[in-house]
Length: 300
Image (cartoon, rainbow, N blue to C red; front, side, top):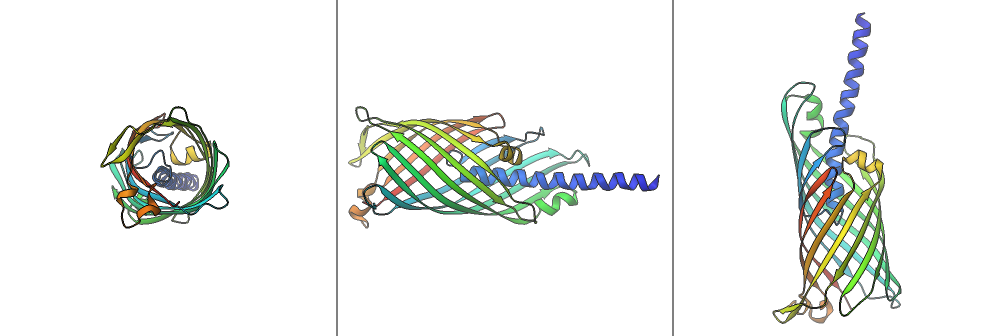
């Protein structure tokens, strides 16, 4: 009888330890996937796990840019991307095992680097392929008395994301307006700290929008707008892992062509645009707002 009781307790301990590890992977994955997805960067989000009533708040801010090199053969456009960002997760919940009210905080910083090539087989079609990597260092904070939680949430941890990204953009022009539709596929691989097994999966983004012609001029430089709606779809594997689900977005940006004001670069960077935008996101397990500032530098 004693042996049976001990076996049941040991089994429960192993299962509980696994659930704590999955809890860690969910929060870390949510932070990493959203920081790497262009639709979800730089915003505040409310997220909820598929399997629990516990919600958590997450905010992230990112500064990213791209540099496009000289065109090769009029149709190939190699480029590099880079950026850094910060994210914060706060979760208050009740520990169902110990009956305690507890809190988890994860403050993370990330660095992203990548390279790719853009190809224009026709005037209206643009294809891109890129490879990127993101490194994230997280400072954990845990308020509670559970030693299993302390193992993952009261320490620093490193996470790495590798991705291959392919996209197709079809665009045309009508009376100065430039509508487009774009499909992007991302293959993600996430590598975790604490000897936890890595994970991988697919993320698809579908985007429909339009750029306006010049609406006004500020400091004698043209200003235009960009309006769009989009969706982010994750495979079940990534969705179950991170707690994120399919989400839908709508937003707008104002773009200001500031290149001619950057005198140190003169004409080499005359196509540089500074953008300021806002976006709303809604999904079954996620909702929030994104505000973003971005820029793109092209060499012609």
